[in-house]
Amino acid sequence: MDHSKQIQEIASRLFAENKIDYFVGYRQNSFDDTQVPFLITDPAEIPKLVFTERSVFNLSNYLKPDHTKRKRVGLVVKGCDSRALNLMLTESQVKRENVYIIGICCEGVLNEKGEKAQNCVECVMPDPVVYDEILGTASGKREYIVNADIKELAQKALTERADYFENIFENCIRCNACRHSCPLCYCAKCCIDQETSTLYHGANTSSAGMHALMTWSLHLAGRCVDCRNCEKACPSHLPLHLLHKQNEMVIYENFQQHLAGMEKDDRGAFYKYSLSDPDDFIL
Amino acid sequence: METEVKKAQGTMVSAENPDITAPADWQPVIMGILCNWCSYAGSDLTGTSRIQYPPNIRIIRVPCSSRVDPWFIIKSLQTAADGVLISGCHPGDCHYISGNYYARRRFLVTKKLLNFIGYHENRVQFSWVSAAEGPKFAKVVAKVTEDIKQLGPLHRYKKENF
Ligand code: SF4
Ligand code: SF4
Ligand code: SF4
Image: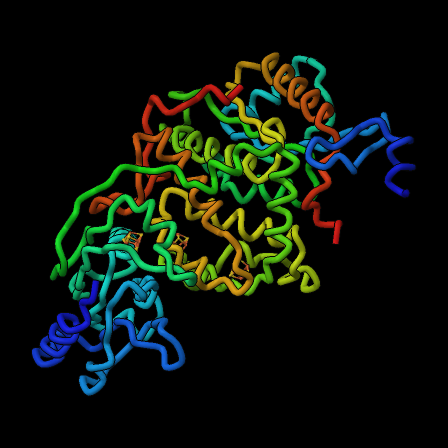
């Protein structure tokens, strides 16, 4: 899956035709074989653009900052990234005429260990759902698979699960990198930050971690596209996908197999309802 | 050693954390978040009809059950409450036509996620109570209070624990 040449050609064409102000792609890291997001305004830097199975990050996130918000941006998206972008378009965070989208029919990216990442093994939609130009051959929608870690954890006893998650929440240092790296987390003011006590604010206790991560994951429920940008950004390497995948599974199983960002103008599972939604848990 | 002493004195053991116990006369604090148009009026009727219900519930009035952000539930569990009861209008009776249908989706996901991270499923409960159902409200509160008494104190993630 090496599309570096094609992306470079498209980028230089877009700059030559003056269709974009920014181009967001990936560039090789200088010290190892990983890649980092690369934002360019100067066509001279185009030869540095690459795209391989090491291009792990979700570039839709770079449409959030002020300096790209009102500019015309060209960017590269994989399947999951394009679902996030689709939601951003639906939620009026990005103007469609301001973005030029190069969609990649994805074959899966690698994790730090060099294996195919878990979200790619379980990916439901590797093809871009929104694009101006498409690279690679589309392979179509796949069947939904319940996350392997969730299945394993669900077997455990309640107190065991509680201990496991307390350990996770305790290790959150409240740096908010997960929030900043998620393309769908864009509120200017976040309700998680409304704590009045400065002593408590930002404290890395399990209580503060639970409050922050649970609220965050529930605000992304029905919208999270499982790109795992948050998890890659987390300095404590917390398995944040557990919370998101659990919500995704409950939503998929109970609400007409809803998956976030698959269709245009679909705002997420919590923005619609059905008269036949499960009701048996209510007294 | 200290926990052993505590265990000998206490008879209530937290369902989520076996190390946490409370004395036999321990009373739970339950956060009740009620919709203005149905359940809040229903609870009012319970009072004016002189029907008794457990005083453990602390009631907050919201305009609609769909005003309840899952954040409210998490915040309640984190600060003071041992359990949460959320109540709104019966499906089809919403003052704003469809608020409770939206709320219902969120409640299911919140409940499942809380259970997944290790809260007993009875900690957070939901009910539909109309303005005419005074006796039902008393019954619901009694049931929820009894359930949460069985579960013991909620210690994990309480804010005072650090
Ligand atoms: S989750 Fe799917 S689209 Fe995203 S990188 Fe993995 S295989 Fe590609
Ligand atoms: S929460 Fe994480 S996995 Fe979900 S969309 Fe945001 S960055 Fe991607
Ligand atoms: S990135 Fe990780 S450590 Fe930072 S706030 Fe998010 S979960 Fe906590």
